[in-house]
Image (cartoon, rainbow, N blue to C red; front, side, top):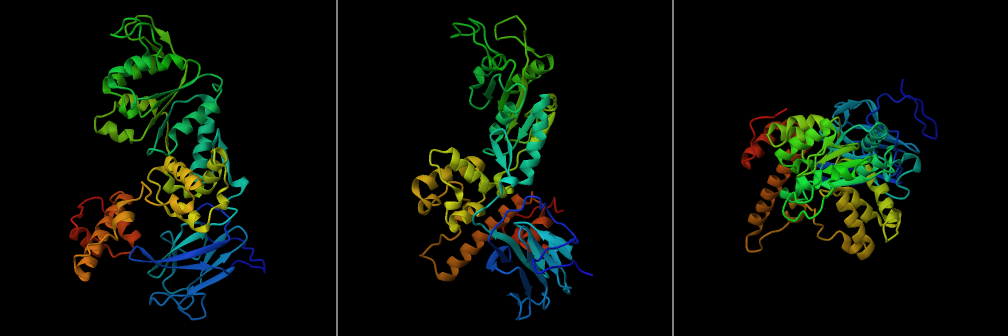
Length: 453
């Protein structure tokens, strides 16, 4: 017997939960985007509390595919949640690759009805989030489960002063997280010193990090305390630690193990008392395997290792980040005042520059208006920029084939990269038969003989 329902559509005891529903994002409208060969071909708005999908003409969304049942599934919307119910279809309903009878839906969920692929997406409108959904850590805020989990872990780390390694792409907010750890620690009244290994010439790194005595080298007219010494009692944040030369990695390791340093040209040992936080845009475990980073230093700084997710993997944070940035910036403006199209573009974009790029776009929005903010965004991928460029000197058929060839190759490259080279996973995401997917790879010279799982 199915779950009980009332006129208010209150759902009791759902069969299976997919994804977190503890942080619902309230929206006024929802849409289903239908995909064919990896490309969206149709989007429909879900406007009813009970929305039926199937082959029958009485369904709200009619699908003509032969693998779809007469009445295949329903999407049921309550005040705060959305869930899907399979209607005893012949080929079943799957959510994110798992066949379900009933399941909660979260934004971005991929639904398969037979062989028809759809994506469940919100059409954002105000309000985009609740204050109860927002978690803060220092000056940082987030609503996504991944960042809330990281904030909770770093909150504990801050209280005990454990060494932390933050790894993630450029612009993901590693520096801001390091600052927040310091602000939440017992050392908050003491210095927070940043040492950026990539911004200091290699010949000066040792003196800038450990200090130098007068006369230690040409131009050293007086003693100079290094970053380690200036961070006494507080926090030393070593950014882009992967750029530290190997010989200085050994000296840093010794300093951390012995908790003392000697200035360049000096003999007196200086005791150290600080928390160290390191950050890298490269996976240091891979750098160790490649011989570019010392294994012993890696284990010394990776006591608590945090992988900071890119913005494209936590788009749930974008609305609250936009509101937060507008409030903090000189152009004070609420995110909810943006048009529906602008909001959707912010949510659909891949954000290769992460939070740094988001702030730049919001600055343009405030200064130039929506009509100019999204033009020639520097982070647009080649696929987004170029796939419709064509040669008018070629016949229509040849020009069309050239565009298709370019699209196929760039799509396959991007999909393989996103799937970490796993061909079976990439084929599933593309909705293609694996043999046909292999043929496409071979056609474009992308055939890989390994990592097929």
